[in-house]
Image (tube, rainbow, N blue to C red):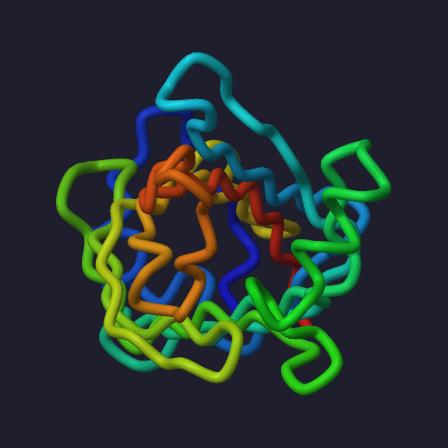
Length: 184
């Protein structure tokens, strides 16, 4: 990894092509956050939650290729409602007994502006794997760390999470990720 940090208006694509950041990176779980929100009661309220345990890694290769993984411990979810959390861990949703991890795998990330990346890969949850695409914004960048922020829109039905009496809950969930990586 090149030691010189970028200036405040650095072009991310140019930095990647220059070799800045090249090498292996690991997720800093202490400064990483994953939250989610789902509309409930026909849109009258929003259920908010978060996950608390993570691992992950990333790599910047020759020519600025980027890949990475965020592994979330499914049982670490919390909506601050014990009964709801137990139900979300059940086979109606995440089925944590059989599928303990949620994995966001980024197979390719390409700069699309000076500080944003177009990411493509897969999302694995509850025994299902689906393709996913999203934009990640570079919020912090130095030789010591990179912080990325992304919003993922997920169709719960593609992961078998269709439980919703009287169709009260939206099938769309929004996940917000703030992930900080440091050199491995």
